[in-house]
Length: 126
View 1 (cartoon, helix red, strand yellow):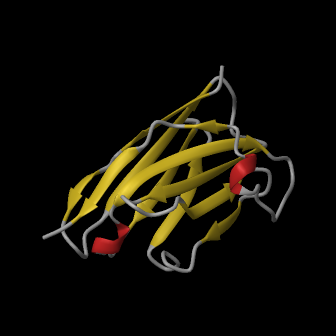
View 2 (cartoon, one colour; view 1 turned 90 degrees about the horizontal axis):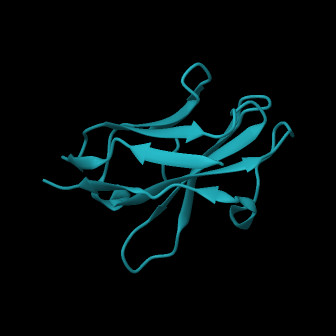
View 3 (cartoon, one colour; view 1 turned 180 degrees about the vertical axis):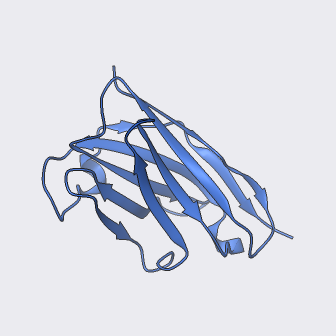
C-alpha cells in the first residue's frame, strides 16, 4: 500500500528556512516521480517542484526557483524540499504526491499523480 507522510511544516519568519519531508512507504522511490504542491486558502493548487527519480531530473516553479531545492534520500526512502528565503506568499498547505514514472527528464501532469500525502502547513509571517 502506497503511503506518503509529509512533515516539517510550521511557522517561520520571512527570510527563514524550513525543510519539508515526504516519507514514502509501500514502494521504493527508484522509478517514481515525486511532486510537491501547495494550496493557499482561496487559491488553486500550485505545482512547486518535482523530481523524477529515474534520472534525478528536477523541476521548479518560477516562483520558487533559486530558493527551494528538492532532493531524494534513497536510504530513507524520503524526498525533501528545502525552502530558503521564505516569503509570506509561500504560506500554504504543502502536499507531496507520487506516481510511477520510469522516464527521464520529464514529469507527470498534476492529475496523473495517483498517491497523495495528507499535507503539512507552512506559515510565513512576522
